[in-house]
Image 1 (cartoon, helix red, strand yellow):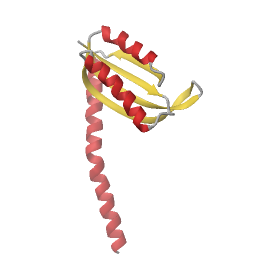
Image 2 (cartoon, helix red, strand yellow):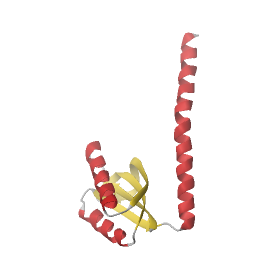
Image 3 (tube, rainbow, N blue to C red):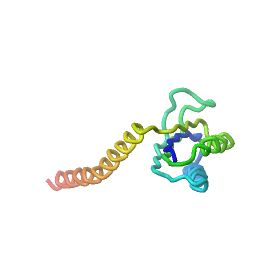
Image 4 (spheres, one colour):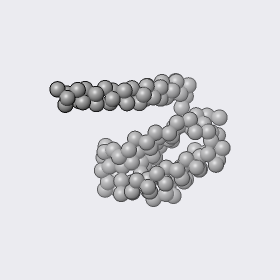
Length: 132
């Protein structure tokens, strides 16, 4: 099994529910075809580098998964048939890219763990300022 990474951009006119439904559709497709999901990241609404289909923003989503090489062609077909997908890119990760992806995931997890601590510290600082 190879490890792959796929990034796709959904049209910005979708509601939050529709966007999550589309993401679940692609995730279910991968799982039902025997792939193992390694990581899933929702990057949210971002500005595109250049307009695509007269749209300047899009919902970005990234999946890391392990699967057979035949799944890539099937996934491309599913992306092409879905009108909500503006762009997509799927590629195989070599051993260096896998190591980098793991490192990136750990850094993101550490930042997420530290963010609530920093937020509570800022709240207590604000409360002490109000009391003074």
